[in-house]
Length: 432
Image (tube, rainbow, N blue to C red):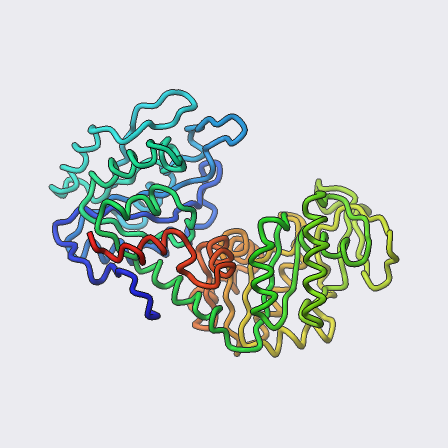
């Protein structure tokens, strides 16, 4: 672990303590777990707590139950923790209870009710093995900035003796990630520590380093992209942000690019001019007449070098595999010592060839450290190249982060201490 003065779980006295653990088990979509990687990654922390005599209360967010248009919190099965609970019970052969609280339609849970105390007695008496709180975002105070936030922090702290944050991927400054550190002795779990250790492999990257970033919106990625433009030796773009870049640089008219992204892309192109030869362009792109699928006769490959300024294109939904056969592209990937990937190159689930070609080319470099961001990057690697995914989980040359957004945020700040939950742990440093 790098010298960062984080309060670590291995230094905590856990015997006979109730331990409130914030995890990032946000892996449920419409009631189904598509990849349990983020859940499995936290099991080491859970085992440690139990082995040291602690009693576990788990909590995570699932999805976005807060409807930003209406301001209503939608409590339903789609964002329930129950699939996670069932997974853990079946995998670990343990008994977990989930409390239910009163709520008014659209207002979420106003707080933690005292009815949970009966479950905590069961937990202390070993009648159950763990408690899993409902989706943290079902609570009115979780994302609030008013008195509801502080009240929820107090109520959650009243359930336990110790707080452990093992949710690296949940970087937002919410009650369950930041607010609790004000009221309980707080520690970083093993996964949090591991993610920070691997961030150092980006901050102190073996050169040359290549970064691959894709996304559906330029504005959410622009600050990390500027940071990577400075830090990495080469940068490759994919997705809509690559489309916006091509439109801005070459004057193509491409469907699906917002005015906001177009403006940001123009500024980005200006910035890349200060770093000649750093941005590696992928010349072959796939145009589709429709977003409905990869339909015969409705898609085609273009070489951007042969397109004239002002060319009108329909949706660009992938990078063609031929791009990764270009000599200059292959050389950059094959000679890299560090590869950071937060990218799905094509419009899922139908346009997969670019992502397969990218990941396959990266794997041909046996010496490079390969660092994959979480979320869609991880899920698509598993879906499209399951053999490579399984190998990567155990390879010291690969690391798959649980939270891609958190990694980009940390890159943007240039340090893991730029993440609010980590900052909270560092600042308080367990002085309570």
